[in-house]
Length: 262
Image 1 (cartoon, rainbow, N blue to C red):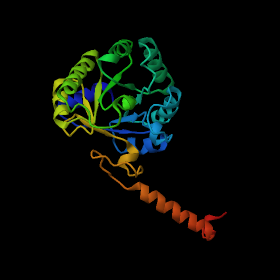
Image 2 (cartoon, one colour):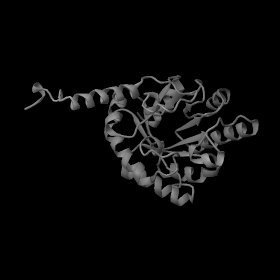
Image 3 (cartoon, one colour):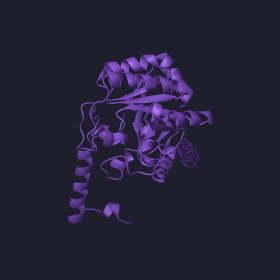
Image 4 (spheres, rainbow, N blue to C red):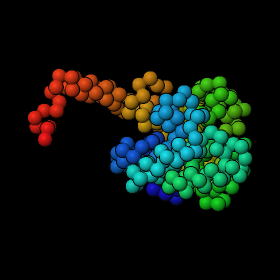
């Protein structure tokens, strides 16, 4: 998968499927199943590290996780989130970190939250050959500013700014844009207004594609169930049941059996 193929998929009306991934083993399975894009999201801060927010994860931690996903991806395009603080301080520092992520992780592209306020850094990255995916709407790195994870762009002024920002990102050369937790009608409007693919999460089904956090859609993260999330499996219960059986088998000495011993 390439950024050019993704644009062609939009032109052909073919939907794009994207999931997060943070390790070699699961990424191998997801890639083999035919996913188009793998996002090594800064959601790893929550899912992998157990933090309440995405803010604590670092560039080096993102690179470490992305390396394993890149090794697993035989088909999918791999995108790495640029974590909080890696591009907000200055354009130069953002470009430097984007280059570091691409060089050291081997990923295909980076993802950046924000619109016009981070446009200089995005333009510079694209000009020197770093593919960039934008991210608008609910931007988790700004959770403290927003005061939570509520629906964004409900008011007309914020909706118009989001549309304006999407057009700026498209004109700057972003190969795709993520829209998170915004009204479906606005997401449809944005999708028709830009030439690059638009990937939704909690943004309705009129986007060019969808992304979910892998652990959420597999039912591994059992305490998280927003309206936009569908559980495509219940692996949380399966894992607990399997471990419970293992514990019992160890305790009663039925594992390992004679057949399982050398």
